[in-house]
Image (cartoon, rainbow, N blue to C red; front, side, top):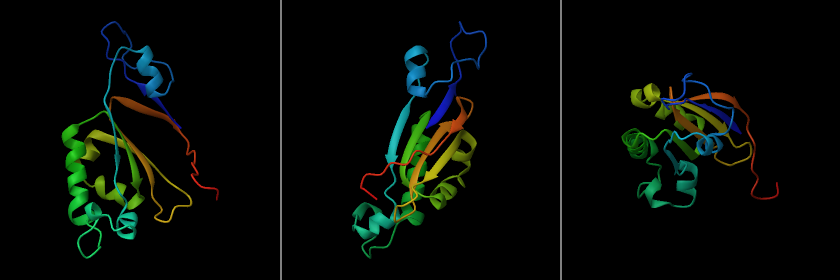
Length: 148
């Protein structure tokens, strides 16, 4: 659960940081200010190799994350320049690698949670444009698709 404080950009708003403490989707229905959201599954290298996913591996079934996909994904995220990104199948090392990019580090804040029981130790991340949103609170809410 992530609560956001959306910066008001309406000229009728006298305090540029005052809005209610609502999730972004709920705030959007109350606030005429719009924002852009995207979601992207990074295809974690563990699963790319395990399931022989051709877009995540080379012909030798080795991950192409650090040599190809990482750079392509950073380029995609920065060129689209959306306000919020939701990323799936991303681990702590990948977030670190991606935020070595000056453009992402300069423009976005991030929060990342690792799923406690997944084989790859991957999880989800939310990136948001600095100055557009402020993280007020976060809490991991695990989702278990199978009985564990």
